[in-house]
Structure formats: C-alpha cells, structure tokens
Length: 580
Image 1 (spheres, rainbow, N blue to C red):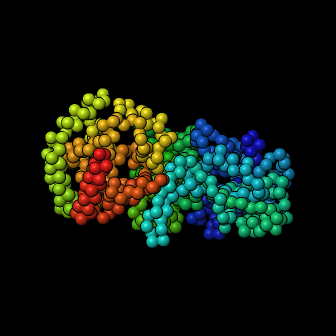
Image 2 (image 1 turned 90 degrees about the vertical axis):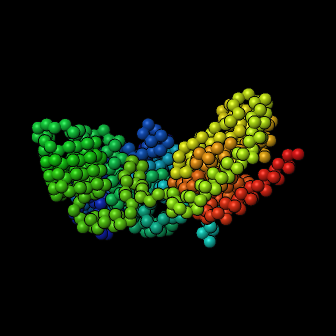
Image 3 (image 1 turned 90 degrees about the horizontal axis):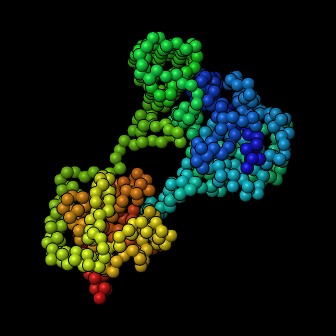
C-alpha cells in the first residue's frame, strides 16, 4: 500500500473548445484563473489518492500535500503557481511529459492520469483491491454515484412494468465498456507508460490514446466504481466543490459574526462597518464590501470584486473584477457577469428545482410532495373514513364476548402484558402505536438480532417459520389473524384503515427512497392488497410489498376495497379451519 501512495500522478485540465480567455463562460477556467478559488482548486489537483480514515471513514480523498504530482494546464490560461512547491506544466497542441515522470522509479506500480475537470470521493480499499487483482496494462476508472452504498437498482419490463428492486449496502465496482472520452482516472502500468507516448507527448484525444494501446498490444480494461463526483465545469458542481473545501479547510477566513465595529481593513480588503458576515468567507485581493451588505458562507469573493450597498450574497462564488449592484440578491450561484450564466440560471428556475450544494455532491430537491392528494369529498378522504368507523364498531361489537377470553388465555399461558404496542408510521408519516394481542414471549425484540441470520424475508423485514419466540397461544392467534383485532381501535382513532398498505416502522421506511412515500398517502390497513396477493417467493416478498402498496394507492376505489375484504375473509376462514 505504501508503494501505491508513492505512485506518480498527472492531473490534466483538458482544454475546452468553447473557452478562449479567463473571461469566458468556462467555469473550470474561472476556478483555475481567479484567486482565491485558484489556490483551492490547484491544492486539490496536486494531491495524492491517499487513504484518510479520519476524514472520510472508508473513503478516500484527494489530499492536498504531495510531491509526486504534476498538474497540466492549457498554455493560454496563464496560471502562475501560488506555491513554489507546486509542479505545473503547460501545454498547447501537445502535452509533453517531463523526463522526471517518464524515468521514475520502476518500483512504483502505477502511473495515474486524473481528469482535472472532476472532483471525486471513492472507496480507497475497494479501488486498491481492484488494482491488485487487475491483470491488464491499462485500467480506466469512472466514478458513478448510482453505485454507492444504499442505492438501488430498479428493474422494469419492456412494458414499463415494475419487476423488482435490488438494494446494495456497499459501494460497487463493476466492469464497464471503454469510455469515449477521458475517464476520471486512468491507471497505466509504469513499465509501459513511456511506450504510449508519441514523440514524448501524451495524446490529448482519448481515442488516439486507446488506439496507441491497442497498436502496442496492451490490454485495456474499464470499471465503474461507486462514489461521489462533482463536475467543476457546471455551476452546481463548482459550488458543491467549494462548499466541501471551505467546510473542511483550516484556512483563516475573515469573520465579523454580526458584530458592529470600526471600518475593517485587512490588506486590500475593505469592509464597511455595517456589513455582516456569517460562516466561512474567503476573500481575494482588492475587495470592497459596501454598507449594509450581508454575506453568508461558504462564499468566495474573488480579486477586485466590489459588493454594492445592501447586497445579499449566500453560498456563492463572486468572480474576479465583478461589481455586484446594490440591493442585489445572489444565492447558490457562480456570479461572473457572463450572459451564459444568467441564461443558465433562468433555465434552472423554470425547471421547478432548487440546486443545493453540499460536501458529497449536488442534489436537487423537488418542490412537489410525494403524497397523493384526493378531493375532500372523494371516496378516499371522506366515504372511506365513514366506512372504516362503521366496520370497526361492528367488528368490535361482534368480538366483544371473545376478547375477555383471549385476554384471560394470554395471561394464563405467558407472563407479561396482554397487548403489544409497536411504533409505526401512518398517513403522511405520522407516528402511532399499532396495537395487537401479544403473541410472543417477553424480550423477543432483543432476541431478533441473534436470529437475523435465519431471516427468510428479503429487505428490512424479519420473518422465519417456526419462530421460537412465539408462545403456544400466540401461534394460534397469528395463524387465525385474531391477534389483529385490537387494531380496530386504531381504526376508530383515525390512525389506521380497515384496508390499506401494510403499517411499517420508520426504520424500514428509511431504507426506501422518497418516491415510495406515495404508499403513505393513505392510512395503513389491517389488511391490504399485498396481504391477499403476495406469492411469498424467496427474495421477492419485500419487492411485492412495495409494489402492491403503491398499486393500491394508485388504483384506490370502493371496488378494490370490497374485493380485498372478501379475499381476506375467505383466507381467514380457511386458516381457521386448518387449525382443527
């Protein structure tokens, strides 16, 4: 592993065809050309891939300090190294690789080329394992967020019908086709790297590089690995990168923290006495902050920027030589004055989505609810509730003579309370206590963790045949569904319905993506579509549960409720007869 940390790494900023100057709309160029954003970006690019358990647990990050790394930047970007220890090379039409890189120690197994356009976090242990197992000469690695732990794969049929779900609890690394463009990382065996150069220069077109590998009979393979990735050429990606870096940085950030005082001037930074700064704010040189300005971090104010009176800036990047008009409001933006960015921002607003930058990536938060809404006097909201009350009262009256006998039998056969209360999520995620007759021995919930290896259900639920935690009477109550009679009290209280989705605890629902919250649009039911339609096939029960619950919400009607009640009644009678 120490040899891996000594591996040479070349970070390349590939030239964009659309950019021509530091004032262009290319955001990566802005990150490279303007201070203090340049300092953060170059510090990131010069780092090693190195395990950092303290910061990222089992993940790896691009560490800031390392002397085995070189950054390649387009010649016309005119970047000056801000640190004498930083190694930067410039290229124009060809990228000539310095001899100190090509003549490196052959004990280093890999030469790494990283794509400077992307900031990534990946599982270091998994990547290292793949490199040790790799038998080829060149390995391309792309970071795919969908392969991260706790993500799911949804399989649908050709008719767009749901087939099933599959959840992963560890980051995946899967074989992939060779990409068309430069990957996030390119691992090349040190012994062959020099043979892939053309007149000492590295091809800048990826297809030419691949052809060079094939012409030399070298083996090229590709994998996709789970992790977080930010595209620094997009506004959301650059904001997410800056947020991550400022939140984890130890740099000294200028703060006022809502304290009034005299005119603040540090170096060439001038801040009026009425301005307010909150959080981490990083300034360039020759910055002027006007009266009554509010700046909320994480924010970067670049060189020669002027913030007009009364302006509000939150979680944004202000480009170099920019004058922000007075009383202007800027939030979650890279403000460079470019018309391209103004147009792009307007387009983002029309999408009805708000970009949110965070340390692991950029997510989008929809404004629409995941719950289905019905009219007030519809069957789902009005008539169904009336039918529930009538049904609950009727059942409780019919079973009133039987309930005292059940209570007495439970008390005589096992110590403990008669009723079992379990916390479940109801309509719109409201928490309630689901009541049943107790069917298990005291302390069964603590034994469940020890029995989980025998779990016969897929997903987060637990089920096993011949469960040793069941009492003698409890097994009979479960098989005949009599244990669920107290849930009709939940129906009277408006916490449940006679028919509806399966009531599930919050710990199970947290393992489901937010779109599945549609099943919480209605009250959970004592019985439901899943209970009468489930096939109990191995490794499909959890998928069927979600499928039938969502189908019920989508097709809710008096007809389907009556059909479910009829099927449930037939099932109860059959199970009751089977006991004797």
